[in-house]
Image 1 (spheres, rainbow, N blue to C red):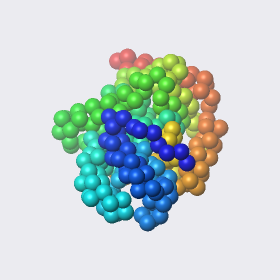
Image 2 (image 1 turned 90 degrees about the vertical axis):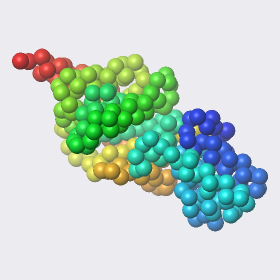
Image 3 (image 1 turned 120 degrees about the vertical axis):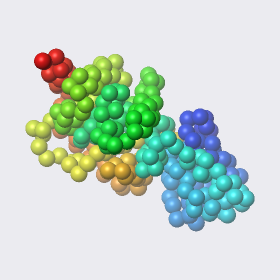
Image 4 (image 1 turned 135 degrees about the vertical axis):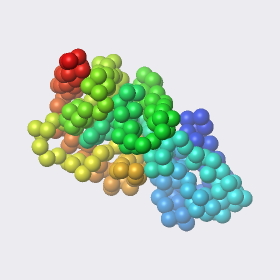
Length: 280
């Protein structure tokens, strides 16, 4: 496995810590596998720590300090490196997403966060937290829109989303908000910035009926899959698990409408919402 390149610390809160880990490991003359063995983790996990795609937990940091003789450096600094504006269950995935070269996502219920508009995101967060103060909702929306700026880069990450038809049909917010949200998706697709497909109800049973799925690929680290539920989520790097989820995604894409047919459907549903909003 090629070693990760030097990373710009501004790209991820964990990038600097990962670069220091790689430096200390190489100085000690250890491979990623040799460092991982006494930690009971894989070489790929060490590579992901070094690439900034995985979070270094305090117990791992403590043992790394012991093995590499770094006098508590990693234990002292891992908490600062792990600070995030995102919830704990999503923070690691958000940091990985920020440096991914490609993201493939199956969305069964909601427009993916990277593609949400302000009004749509606000409706989502208000539904999640109906009694939260407005400033709390404002902060959540701001963070989501800031995360979506990943797509301001014209080429990276490549985003390929398969949307269940339920994403289109479930009204989140007002009809106008839905029309705007769906049009935003189509604009991004027609600009060739994303690939989007719709998995219609008519497709029947499919390979991901148990929930959402996100796959992330990286230039210098093994791929990850992210699984999410209510207030919970986890990254998986086990090669067999990732391979199985890649097959699941391929089956979903094969069952979905083509990108051209999907755009036509999304635009049609957006028009329906726009007309509904105009009715007295």
